Length: 429
Image (cartoon, rainbow, N blue to C red; front, side, top):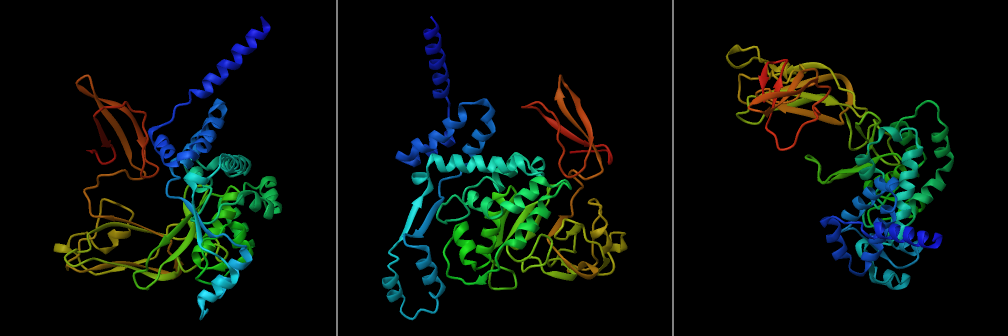
């Protein structure tokens, strides 16, 4: 009788594990994976066994759904040979001789969806969760930010490696200091400490996508490679960092890339990997004393609000300047652009006008918030709102809240008709 009980119990557990259902998005990835489906499915079943792993299961689903199109591209040759070839590639007068001598062969491409293993994904997920739960700032990192800025297993098309383990080993001393810290260290402070330890780069443009260990060993490349090394290093230690870029400057025939760290307060602060810490000046955040907004023709500079922030997320202030006068001598002069009130605006007397700030000294401009002329519809900080929904032939209140930012959250029914009342201004949206 006792043996029969054990058999039934084991069968029940196995049956529950085999009944794990997959979304259509996951099934679509499985179809693209072909024979490698079993490796991807193994990851999901691994985390589907225990309800305590439900968050890890969601993380695995996130990685798998976003896997199509990701791949590794590299020369199947010793890295020292590849690095040597790339270092002199631009100056090589006989490139074929170089390729024949070093025998690099052809570029190898391996799509993640058809080659990645379950062990690699599981190890990546486990290490990402480990640091997320260990670091003192982890409690301030929401799951969606964790998925986007700590969890990903690759950067671009670099060859895959166990970079999390290598980075944790390389920075083990400072990581231990993070865990032992009693001053409640922030993500920005942690990012700055690690960034100072990254090697100084020599600017070379011919290097292909490199993994963490290749970047640490070569310390060569452009802003892409510097940013990639920062992302690898920070994410391995539980610091949420993203990659940002502009394909082209408006006044310069080239682009630039850099990194952003997600702060404990939810702001993103830019920095240049291996060069400039968060809030410090780099090519992507030069310092300026003057700011000026110039309206397009026939625009009359109809701007309601402009706010300018530095690299640490602080709002910048200065002496307001601009085109004098207003339409029909109304009170809507250039100072209204910077008065913090989204319901006022500048209505210039001439069709092409401007409004600006003199900061008094050069400042880093990291973010600009611009609100054009509008009828005041929106959610504004400091104002009180009430959300109502239509129920039993009348409007029923779902509660009143004062906005702390531009987002309001209410517990509300589905498939309902809503109206938002701005109590402060006594208007409805």
